[in-house]
Length: 113
Image 1 (spheres, one colour):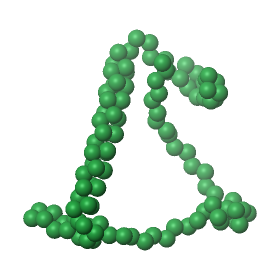
Image 2 (cartoon, rainbow, N blue to C red):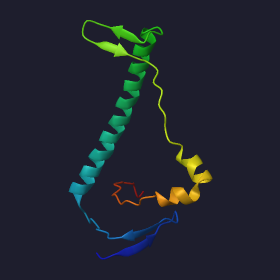
Image 3 (tube, rainbow, N blue to C red):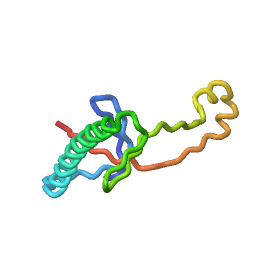
Image 4 (cartoon, helix red, strand yellow):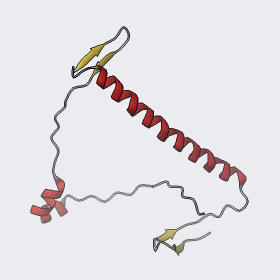
């Protein structure tokens, strides 16, 4: 299908090419698997964070721990970052001179119902 413009119920405008998958069980199955893996990924991330917190607690405030097979480090790190929002506010003309536009592709799947 050629380029079309769709304005959804949410007022979001989409302009681009559209492929309609009619009765395509393969794509539906792939999307179901995608969502299933995404849910597992969230659960695993939460479990990982809980385990990391337990390990950090076991260090009892120390910066390093040693086991028979692992070295654990938990030390504070200081970083310096450029404050682009402050720079933009105070030096808008210079800021605009250094803006660079780039294009990328954003992949997203959302349920229709």
